[in-house]
Length: 176
Image 1 (cartoon, rainbow, N blue to C red):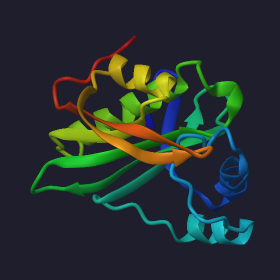
Image 2: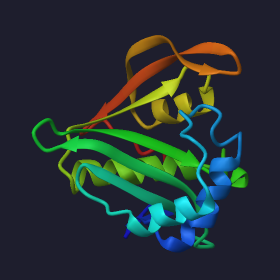
Image 3: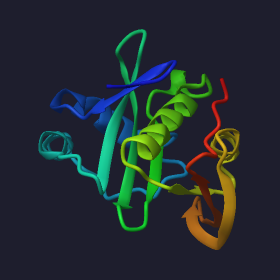
């Protein structure tokens, strides 16, 4: 079990399908994410049942410590032992838990796992420049800007820049 101060991270269970389906339908959840094609509840349930975590593709449910309630997802993808690097994705599906430190704790716990257990050297992510809340969380955790893709994300009829950020082993901050 991967436990932080506010959350624990665990493998996806078939019982998570309804929450995932609901989160995927919430426009606020997907606001700054690349949206996949719509999926039925049956498709989401099948994904949860068949999901197998591997070194190169790890997705975990974010669950509150206090209520044991599923509130989001975090993942490390594209991990390769040869390069010691992986890409991070995160989202909180339950609105009442956004802005309360749960996402920060989940990212910190997952990065710590990546550095300690997976022996990664660096973890990277892309964030839409206008997603200032996420950007500040990543900065607080020690992520630094490495580059920018100009006008690479389209939302609401406008193009937005994406910022590449990363944190290296030993740079991860504990915002306490």
